[in-house]
Image (cartoon, rainbow, N blue to C red; front, side, top):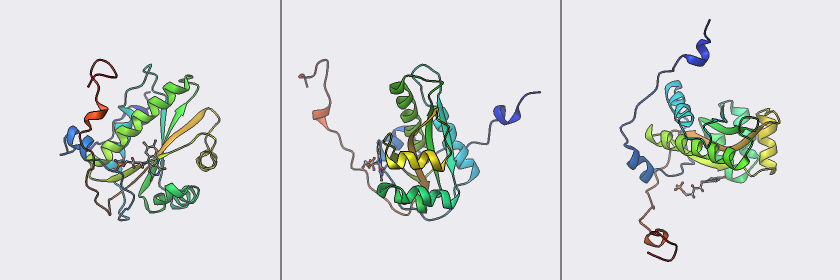
Length: 188
Ligand SMILES: Cc1cc2nc3c(=O)[nH]c(=O)nc-3n(C[C@H](O)[C@H](O)[C@H](O)COP(=O)(O)O)c2cc1C
């Protein structure tokens, strides 16, 4: 008998936002209305994470969805720059399995590619989100490990805070000629 939990695709949303607009217009959103995120939205966001490229196609990422208010509050209190989690509809911890990908530079790259996919999906669904960095061995790192009951081989790489936006931020991203190089470093 096949395992339906593994193989049954959830209902996924589509977006009217084209991929280049999403890349250009996405901003970190830290204020939320309190409205919940639907199951279809959440599955769509998680699926975007699962679609990310991985260095050796080992797909070492795992996503922990945090919706419990006490747990969100605990994580929010653990780091000044993560306070918005207290008002978020949910958080997603992006973690890597060190037994699947042993090269840490690959593990982090894979998790970060998934994190950016998640942020773009959040934007595409007209929700708001922000990437929260997890510094290895920091107090917040330890709090995340404890709060999410992570086994030793699971490495937390990032947390994304998600909700319905209660702020609008214009895009500041402009063309920066000085950061573009052709062929060699010194040529412009
Ligand atoms: C690795 C990384 C870690 C970040 N950590 C935090 C964080 O802890 N708290 C926070 O509010 N924003 C965090 N951010 C979001 C940045 O502050 C934000 O992307 C940056 O200011 C540019 O703004 P924008 O995302 O609106 O373009 C992080 C972003 C990255 C890529």
